[in-house]
Length: 599
Image (cartoon, rainbow, N blue to C red):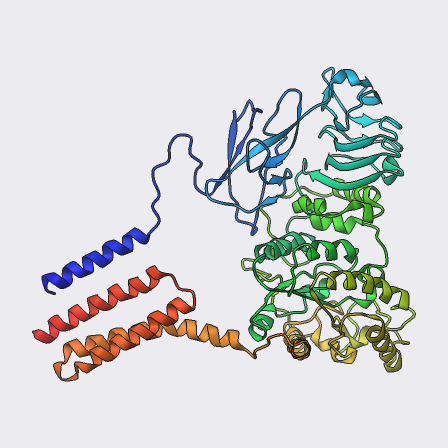
């Protein structure tokens, strides 16, 4: 290699080095890598001082924050959450809830100044009276050095309040404690043991913020998949999205990457979790992340019509279990639209009290529904349950959860309730489509005849204001294609169902005039995978052109092949440093070939 070529290679190598990230030595007070610093922001801990550095677990797409009350204390204040800015002007994150991690992240304790103790009549851990007139009530953790455990009946009756913060020490809110109140924002901790709707009788509460003061118990379970799926939905804020919504038949029923390949303009999110909890708040949370042009494909399960068809506005314990690892999603709901808020929360709390504590670092994407842990992912990024599942040996009923496919179960009233929600979502410019959940034919009631099923299909087509894109009969399968439960498809069943959904969805989108191209995603992937081959071929041609003067033209051909590879690499999203690295390698190969050829 002559001096000029050597110099050129050295210059290219130096340029590549400038593209590599530079990591300076950390100052004494710098935030360590892969760590979130929690700043007491006026509070402190005897064990940790003014701040605490917590390692990022990476168990989820977004990181769960510390519970907080175990780390920092501040006399006369109640810790109400974390904030990305020390003055509270940044993003609020509830204790234990999730945040999108960034290198060097610092979260600051949010403190609310407690109301003066003289405003409370207090005895034996119980607040008996309140004499304040402010519209913000921050109840202190202790009065006269004694922890506040209970709020008695009538203490805050008929008050109009903007903000109420219940302290982490509180265990009981007695019936009528806040009766007749109007509260804009209520903050409480999940340490409360006794609370009910009667505690807030005739009380209007718009926003509820829940701080975690206890370790989670549902981490790693299928309930916990909701928060991970919602994280993925949040990450696609700038993308066109196709959201698949159902119960557990959705988790077990789609091949989302195949749908993305068939409909490449949309990123797919599978939000199916559990059918026997009210779908209404889930719809509203999903809706909050959808924009004009996005698609929502719903497939309600007919063995859970009350919950799947939004026939009630009552919250239930299952909803709280699904939000346990990120309570902040609850604050996105307008609670004036829901009933049984605190009754259901109390059932959830009682159930949790008898369960073993777990850790936020447990990911449901490493478990199956029975709690068995695997060394590989059981879910993909989109939210499909991908644990390999064999076909069943026999075409028969698998579980005794019979589904009634008649209009006596799927009533006109139920269809109208679902239609109200879907029509409201569609009014936001979202394309809402209806299909059917998969079902084992052997799991239908005797009266679910072909005629009865045709009547359901006719009812849905007539009363829903959104398109029904599938034929009901196309989603009823032999029991062979189900795994343990009569709406949980086997791996082969998933492929059969997904093929049907792609066909139905593509046909409907073409009717709607939306852009659908058959399988371009696979072509895109093929092009991307061909880039290293092109670079390798270019290197071979350049080497041969240098070694053999009589075929020197191959070196020029290699140059053209390299150029094609570089263009394809950049078009398919490769970084500039990736292209330059191959270029440097090509130049070294060329220099070597020339040297050997000259010899």
